[in-house]
Image (cartoon, rainbow, N blue to C red; front, side, top):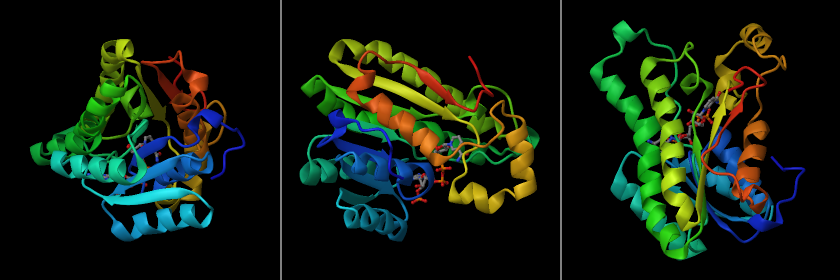
Length: 256
Ligand SMILES: NC(=O)c1ccc[n+]([C@@H]2O[C@H](COP(=O)([O-])OP(=O)(O)OC[C@H]3O[C@@H](n4cnc5c(N)ncnc54)[C@H](OP(=O)(O)O)[C@@H]3O)[C@@H](O)[C@H]2O)c1
């Protein structure tokens, strides 16, 4: 997507987007590239990553595909090394990989599944942040954006592990904001409701989309651009006094 808002402070920044091979992350990678940023795009699906990077490059942007499992610290460190070697030190991290929210009764949630979801949706963010933090601390600057969910803000239909992981992301963000603020590093969190990504469009029948829209005061589901616009703003100098926040991108469904 192309943002209608210009953020000159993002031009020439190096941005690392995890979960960039599809969905919200892919849209985020395209949006930062459209602002003139150089974007490292991380995912596991090499073909999908290549498509995202090709689209950015064809539009005149700069992007690099990085195949890595973000639950693996060594793989994340390799991706960081590759992006820093080819695009420069990471100024902005969007730790967006995850998305294991589909409903499972807690009585049927196995220990293995619990651990997998916590790994994919919480530990992945910790590892991605740890990979870029030493450089940001050394340079005394950086902006990190984490990804939570309405599921982490109030009880709902998502499985327990996903809800807990996403609530954890909110506290991770608040904790690190306090710790890293004196070192010039900001960290903020996005907590979207149901966003109409390709996957959600494919899996949620139109009648159900209407029902879900009806529980939102603004009477629609979110669009990837609703999330991406917030990410651009939070990463930009326009948000230079904002840290530790969680923005509920929820059409009014979550208001505190
Ligand atoms: N869509 C929504 O309604 C919604 C609402 C609230 C929050 N969110 C959050 O927003 C984020 C993106 O969601 P989405 O709907 O855009 O998801 P999606 O379409 O399912 O895409 C998930 C992305 O995360 C990547 N990913 C997942 N696990 C990974 C791992 N272990 N290592 C590397 N990459 C990994 C996937 O990469 P590969 O496919 O290449 O492996 C893919 O790029 C997630 O954190 C999700 O929890 C989404």
